Image (cartoon, rainbow, N blue to C red; front, side, top):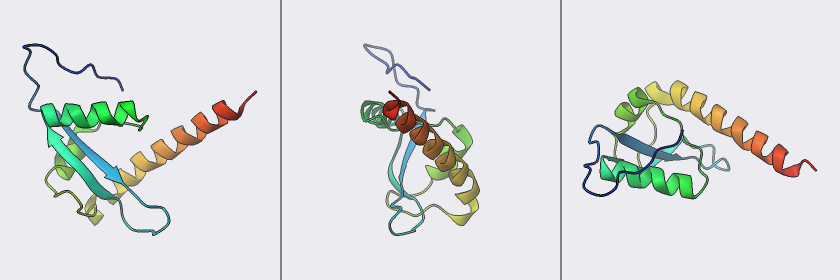
Length: 104
């Protein structure tokens, strides 16, 4: 997914939502929300993610659910299946990136 941030006098789309998750694989804890916002804040979250090479997955329904939670909250058990699917996609993409970098 690639987004071009709004510039100039164009307003940010307030329906755009972004939620950033972090999971510490060493603890086995559920993923936690580390950032959440909409409009300009959502665009900033996406810009930071893209700049740091963080994999981004677009899922408006899941973002809507997760944006109702507070930063530092654990993901509710009802959303774990969707988050697990996203994490699986990200881990697969990361391992494919690592394999391509290691190839001669």
